[in-house]
Length: 624
Image 1 (spheres, rainbow, N blue to C red):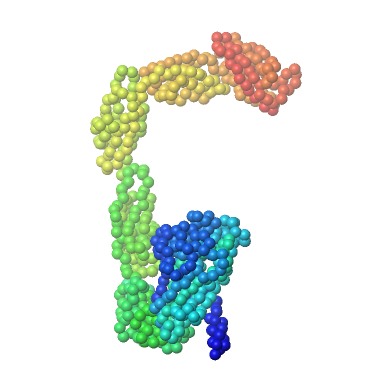
Image 2: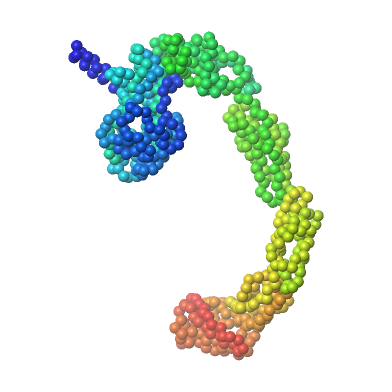
């Protein structure tokens, strides 16, 4: 007798060993779900007896676990985050495998129905980050075995292993499933999870969303003359009634009992009294509804959701004609401000088309809640249901008004010492608000500073004019630079000045780009005409380079403008200080030779002496 019992157990054990797999038919609502919490941070430990591993509140080490949505804070070779791609997201069970393979989770699940097929499923993730390069060959892979035992813990109903789950460079959840059938008189089972590999470098995992649900025939619901998943009807085509037919695939149940259900949100379902056939004719519908059918082997099992399966929902979708879009307000801009986008508000499942007329007209933009016009005017928005092809709703007018800005320009006004100056906003028939608190067009001030006036026109458009009142400064000429034909007058200070070389024509730039050689008087005054300084200077035109190539252009080094002066003398040196050429300045010309021989291309130096003026020294280039 003992031998036969052992043989029977061996045969049963062989029969229940199988690869993992999901329910191929229709599934019931979950009878058990373990999500480990949807909050943030570390959760509470597992109940006593579920695991022999030790609970910690940080990254676990060998033989430890935690409940958290944060990983990789203490073990930097792990992934640093968990993707929210499971059903619940949030926290998960994080397990650091013990050095010896074995069981790390055991949980009794109750509420099952006898002689019923079920699906167990769970999400698993290898938490080791392969890109860290810490473990050789990507580390020890995760390998988990699931076992379903009867409540006496003596009969193995089903088992299966995930196989090797290798590490990855980014965290990736993978869902695994296992189907089994409860026995007669059996309403509870024990779920066990084992680590098939030894601990070490790798073999650490996260588990989330452990779920048990009934598994029945794959039952499909079809509507006469419609698509399998449902039918979509525009409101203008309603009401509509659909004849639905339930067709189980006979893969699990030997007999079939039906109960049709209806829902408004595809979550909360109500039984339809008396609708227990395999067909159902919906009433004439003017609003959307979902329909499904529960299927069981026994009529008594239809009363709950634990011992039966349910088809996918069939959706009768009535697309409502949209309301007119809501206009939160017309837009107004001033002058050259960028045109804002016009916008309207519609329902989440709607989009907007824009037109230039209240009816008909030209389509300006489609599938957009906003429209940015290129000119002012009134535009019209109508809402349409996204991807519906149904009629749009009524149009809403939205306007853009463009008002002119006051035309101003900022100024700099010079205040002479011990005097007053009048500041003028420059525009009439406007409102004025000065930074001094005054509200007239003109004000009189006697102190330097920045004065601002806000000018507002009748449209409410405003601009700020800035008037800088600067104290007159006595300009101090430090240097007058002659560079070829260009003359630059340099001052000891910055300020608002005007410059002249002839005493009549003044300019705001201190650079005179084309001046013939000669003796000049530089004049500098403040822009208020309070103070003027003068300096006489000699301007000679010295070339920066010459090209003695006999082309008739710039073949000689010569200094223009010396004829305006008295006696002058020029010396030419090479870089070593050797005198190459010397002579009177007015008729001085050098062709780039020394002792009858052409000198090489290089930099050379000059010294020019002029009676009554400082000598000038510098260098130039000989180019060949």
